[in-house]
Length: 303
Image 1: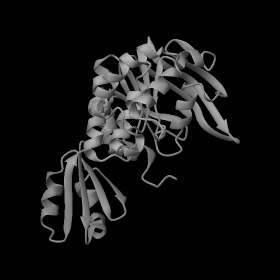
Image 2 (image 1 turned 180 degrees about the vertical axis):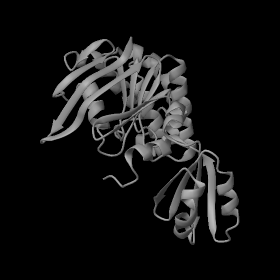
Image 3 (image 1 turned 90 degrees about the horizontal axis):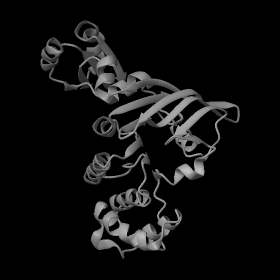
Image 4 (image 1 turned 30 degrees about the horizontal axis):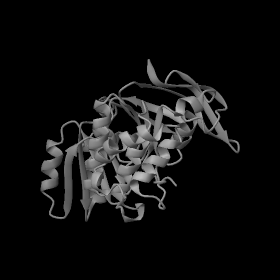
């Protein structure tokens, strides 16, 4: 049975349709990525799944329970890592975990038995009595993740869990999420880091303007939508060079600012031509999930 199913989900605000018949299923034990530009409908989808917002039409089933009808009972089995930390600065690390656990009516004796393992999971075993204000951004994110586990949830929603973190802290969070998958947890991840989704998620969905536009395994989506090799060309004269050579040497060309993205099944001749230039610079790489995302949603800025 799926951990979460959305069927024909629609939601409008002030006459603007934010979700337009969204259909999704998330399997138990998988990390599922929900991707989309700003305003695509990701946050609305999460709020609907948690029963915080009522859909205009459609059906939501979370852990075999109809939402929003049984939202309160279902949230006991769910963990949430919000986009912005909501830790209480007036309490210590340990007290934040203890007080949050009481919201689930978990007895203090059980909470006190769980907290040491959660502190170890977060890499904060020796900081339990420290105040929240003394923590770095990475520590706060790890604590937010640990707090979301206080009720031993089956399904965990993670809303951009590594935003604002340096690479070291981001990799630590990734390692912790892999641990949760090994424990059999189901993860629903929203992120703007395509590398993060490609590394962690067994499947991803890309939504835009409230509509599902792609779903599948990351590598399968790359193979389906993008040529396998990409050459990024930039530097003095890139525009003139691309006008003269791109159509002959690449299968497809896209442009953002001063950079030209040339997509190719065989870039050998393209690279030979670029190496002759003394002013151009280029980067040759394999196609990625970010290329898929930009092709399907566009390169224009979203606010």
